[in-house]
Image (cartoon, rainbow, N blue to C red; front, side, top):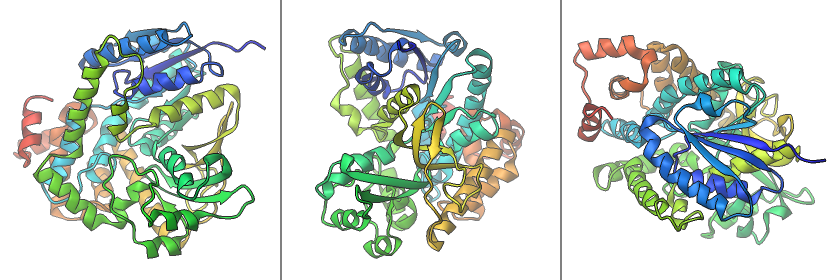
Length: 464
């Protein structure tokens, strides 16, 4: 039977990750025959979209496949008839990330893109935008799947399900992909020889590993990690080892982001050192992105450059392509996704979003049951999920008290006067992208609230 050609729309098409997305689609064309590829961005991202769009077209032209890459600043032009919509946008661009990092650090708190105060504000800016995208999809492509890898992916995906009332959504993250690519070789195996089971939340999951006979080999991998073997830690996370005694009793492997919780003291110290010297991760990434886009301008470049691996989100796009191909072909492949819990993690509500191993087919994700967690992991997980729910509600309603509740719940934010100062300064800093908090922001401005960090204040004063 001839396969139906596919229309894919990528919102945030000017992202530096787009070439990886194109590479993934080209690699899977026999399974996923694309007829239309649309890149969508906003006016502020127009130049980058044109650069990366031209490169994307060169990549397709260098392939055996006749695919036209369309570009637009109007998503309503792109969406009609779409089969899949992928989202990889950053509200406020990298300057917003830099403010998310520097303002907390100026008070001695973690400044990080998806953890702590910075992650909360990224959700505040992103959730209203993706809910607007969902409303357009309901009208223009009601049968499409939304594949989200805009961070914080777990909260954004849950907001789509809960507040957008859109069930055809899957959230993705590169962290499980990195682990599954690197861990097997630490014990002399290939991925095909192992079975992985993940459970938790986005950037807050654990996993176990088994061989094909059902024998658990998690401890073998843990032991190998302490022999200096690479377990696939993302490039953006400082490599502080977990305490081995903790992993031995846990009998699971935490994701790389757990370092911000299990080794909070050391990770904060490292972040503060960079803040005071070479600049935060966002400032470093900005330089990397500038270098990437200079490469992308090369009219002879028709493949993904190796430098893209320096970005912390490497393999995000490949995960998206695999997910889309598995839905389209009803392949029921094992992929780690954010989806509705449905009892896979019994320590959390059945209707909340979790990041788990799932089989991906034509009806979406079928979450694989993981079972209950031990008390320590259960306690962490329930705290984090309830914090996420407060964040999502505040993002939708603009409820300042709910935002403050999220801050006080978050383990990266010491509760007290400084927590409120960071919340208030971030509201001022992101005024342009937080209309739901407009009344509170006006009140803070009238009270003379200013931004303590010089760099964040300067970026804000320039209207960036």
